[in-house]
Length: 495
Ligand code: UN1
Image 1 (cartoon, helix red, strand yellow):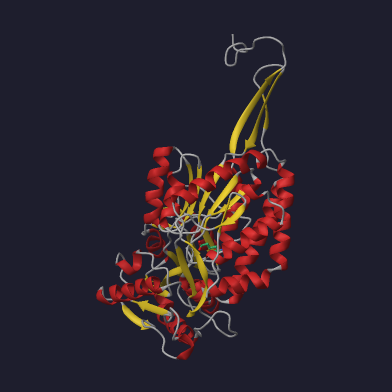
Image 2: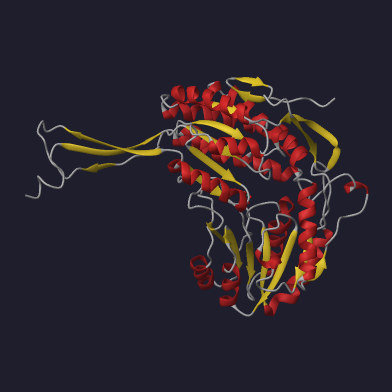
């Protein structure tokens, strides 16, 4: 009998009010059951909010450097348990161990960055226009933050959201993806062990019902969401109506541009990692390879030859390059897009089917797939697939490459491979993305820099780095007049 997991609400591990559960299985081998996790409902969210409000009262009054100390201990515990966390993560999410170790590391980096921010959290002190008057701004906690996470970074993304939120003095309700609830459970255990007061963190497992209840709850003033653009739009409507603070990280259709002067071996390594790492299930995944016509045929040959050699299998086994997709539905979506590609006249250069063989028989595997001759404006060229499918687009020159990169609705990351320093700098200006890499793939953002995209990818906020602390805190301005007289701003100095 599979282990039954609980929510963490009101400072205790509790069963969901619904008495419903979702069975979580290993996507590389669906006969491996990780456990049953709560399929919670609105009442569980309501309980979590009430408790989180008490948590907020306590935590928002705790000095920021002490809040930082808790996060430093969280980083220490995550470091000590890196192997255990990576293993648990690969088991429920599928990506290879090297990648889940990177995912844990991103969480550790985020913890230590947030810990030190507790001793900064700068405001400004600025001169007043009046004599004997002081003016300053400070950062204040906001309240209960509802954090809604995707499956692809089971630890890094929850930490990106939760650690800065906590450092700023907010309490947090985590709604992990129902596909990776175990990793979130381990994270909450670590937070508690590190000394976070119990009511400051709540964990409510479940699906869309939990997410919707959080978004619609009047006492959750901050929502952060990473996921699809369609869901993000619905969340945005509700938050707009309720005047909530909302950070959205949504889709991508990221491209790697290869110019005719590029180091093709380097470009090859970049595109393999960008397109097929995490089985293409990153918001930052390389989904389009935009290649200068002079090197197009050669580059395609190199990519196809290398893609065919990638070894599929259980990410916990040695020598596996690519794990499974997260679930049957994700696999079906990839299959649908392959059909759409064929229907719209693209040429299948490799992949395009499920693998055969024992190693992959029980999981949601799909072969790394490359399409060439992908027409500008076709669905393969425009829509996010979130799987191991790469579309190659041939271009005439740099301007054409920029145009193709920019003509999609999304704007998360882009990459350009060139030896021409002038062109590299022009690209940094011309490519409409939140992140541009020069001679490096579209994935691999670092935790201490702002992360996010333009256009339909986001709503203007950033995760990571210094900017995220502004999202999770409210600016308050204080004026102190110590003149003992009424001084009228804009008037008494300008008579
Ligand atoms: C995501 O796919 O949502 O830059 C996040 C990267 C990772 C984070 C990706 N550090 O690829």
